[in-house]
Length: 266
Image (cartoon, rainbow, N blue to C red; front, top):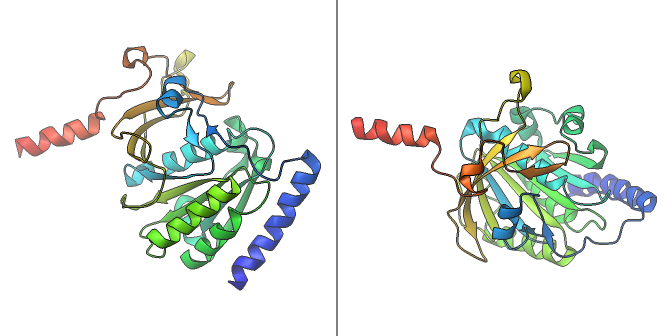
């Protein structure tokens, strides 16, 4: 607990300075965190609900970076200059690598808004998360964990959800190297990397993501989406070659289809 207090003391001072410089309100406005992809947002009633908990799982171990990137880009779409708090354990830093500020800027985000806190272990991470969601002036909180997280049971999850709701803070739980399990999250997603569309001269295309809605407390799940990141507009949209998908529903990824055929052949 002393470690949590030490970490969050400096964090609160930084948020207070940003709030004083930018004239930020005490809490974010209620509403939705929109992706910018109109069909995707409309299907969710406007986007991801603000002041709620949303979980993101990597579809495969190799998709961990894509899941983290999607959560970060989504959080960076929050309006204004309100800080975004990213909490992770030291172990997560070793596994996923350091967050590269120039890379965030290259994608159109403002790395100055990102406040990174590394906790020593899962217990400290949970304590920091409980404090961070109540920090006045923060736009969103990302909590990155790797593997099983036994301390994050239904009781702990409910406390975080209530804290986020009361403060109006959007809580994005980045569960890497873990399998989806029952929780109190408003939405639960599986994120995988999608093949980007090459630009002129066969230049690398924009980051693209395959998403599957695993759970939605307010509606039906099971929908699949492809979202491409637009650097210029700083929003998600539909890829150039995806018009036939009508902007939303995706078939099963090719790699899963191939695995299924292989199983039948065996």
